[in-house]
Image (cartoon, rainbow, N blue to C red):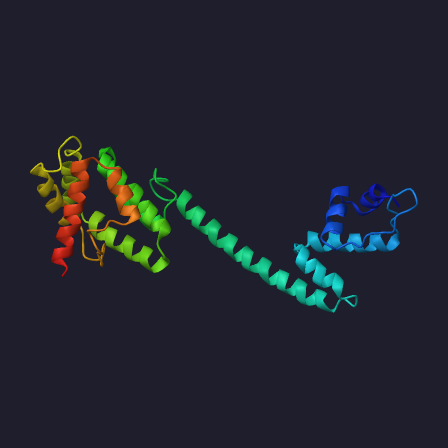
Length: 251
C-alpha cells in the first residue's frame, strides 16, 4: 500500500501518518526501487491502534508506552488512569456549570464587572444606586479583580468584610458620602483641604477585616501604584491618607 491508501483504510490523514513516523510511533516501511514507501498489513494494524488510543484521549507519549508492550499489559493501567482523569474533569465541569447557573439566576442579573461570585454579585446589586459614582465604579472593578486573584480563604474574608461595608443601610450611607467626597476631588489639587476630609470619611467605612495587614505604605506595590495612576492626583492622595489612617489605628 502507498501512504494515501494506508491513510484511507485506517481513516486518518497522510499528514497524521507522517507525524507518527516523525515521533517514532509508526515504523518507517521499506522503500521500493522507485523511492516510494510500501506499507503492509502490520503498519495498518499499528496505525489503527494508534487511532483508537488517541480517540480515547491518550496523549502520544502514553500511546508510545502502550505500543511498547506487545502483550498489552500496560493498557489496562493506562486506560484506568484515563478514566479517573475523565471523572475528575466531569466533576470539575459540573462544579463550573453550577457556578454558571448561580450567576445566571442571580437576582438583579450579572453585574457589569462580572462574572463575580454570587455573594459579591448580591452585594453589588444591593448598592446599585452607587453606580453613578465614578469612584464607586472603580472600586467595584478593583474588588472584582481582587476576588479573582485571591486564594479561596482570602476571598471569603474579602466578601465577608465587604458585607459589613455594603450590607447595613447606615454603612451604605457612609460609603455613599465617602464616594461623593472622592468624586468631588476629580479636579482638585493634592493639597486641597477636602482631601483630608475624604480620607477620614473613607477610613470610617472600612472595617478591620477588610485590610487586616497593611504593608509598607512608603513603597507602593505594583497593583496599588497602577490604581493610583488611574485616579486624579487629589483622589490618589486621599486613598494614600486613608491607608495611613488605617495603619495608624491598627497599630
